[in-house]
Every structure is written in C-alpha cells, then in structure tokens.
Length: 202
Image (cartoon, rainbow, N blue to C red; front, side, top):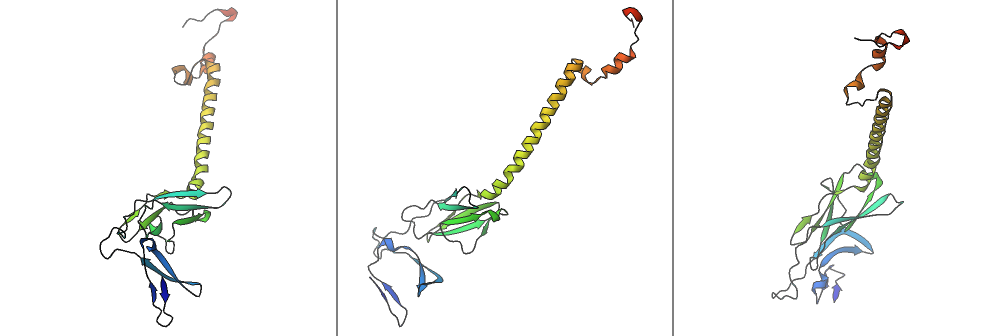
C-alpha cells in the first residue's frame, strides 16, 4: 500500500480510503520532525464514499482533577463523526499557547495567574471555539477568602444580637425603640426621692 524512495525521499500511498484522513507527523530514525502533514481523502468523481469532512461543532471543556495531585487534565470535547482531521488549539486568557495541539491539556497548580482557558477545534472546513473555562486552581484559591469573610460576618451578627439581648434584659427595650438609646441610669439618679417611699409629683 505504501512505498518510500530512499533516493528522492518520495513517499507514496496507494488505495487510500476515507479512514486515512488524519494529521500525520514525520519521523526519521525514530525521531519526530517538527512538521505535520494534513491528509484529506476526497473522491475524484464526486462519490459519497469519500465526502468532504463535516464542520466541527462548538467544543466544550471537561476537567478531570485527581484528589491529592497538583494538576488537572482538561479535555476539548465535541468531535463529530467524519470531521477529521481536527487540529486542537489551547488558549490561556485569550492567548494561544504555542506547542499545545493535543485534545487534552494539563493544568498545574503553578498556573494560578491564569483566570480561564479555552480550546479551539479546527479542520479544513471550519473552526469553532469553546466557552471560557475557569482555572480550577484559581477557583480553589478564592474559596478560603470567601469563607473567611462569611465567618467574620456571622460573628459580628452574633455579637450584635448578644448586645441587644443584654440591653433588653436591663432596660426592657430593643434597639428600634426610642427608650433603647436613653441613659436610663442617669434618669433614675436625676429624680428626687422622698423618705418613707412617698411618690414625687412633677
């Protein structure tokens, strides 16, 4: 099915089918060369046996984070049948990441400076970009700060309630009542008292 000319370097593949449509890399002496070949098989006579690749869909990002590990694996999902060859492009905060063209992308805990990731699917017919996906390690950092703020708020509310209850027991009034803010102790001292319990008339 295939033949390599050792003198000219010409590589010939015969009897191609649609299944050969894909992205190929070149290796010389088991060493990969930084070059890719996009092979698309098409019918020369317009037959449905070898149709043009379908358009790629809008991809979605799925995350897999194992407990105890300092990394997460993001997967660019959504490849339909007969959309190959598909190229994957990863972006961090809307900046394309050079050299990351696989379907999966590994995020490490030292990437907390990145807010979000996106992936792009591209083939000879179309290209689509996913929605933004929040950095799992960025979200993990912001969690404790939110929890601490809620805890402080709850403590302040409890203190206010305790003060109100204590004052209620002493003055029989609540903060929204007028007598709550009066100095009742000073009022009691300002009223003259007569011996033997006689009332005072003002």
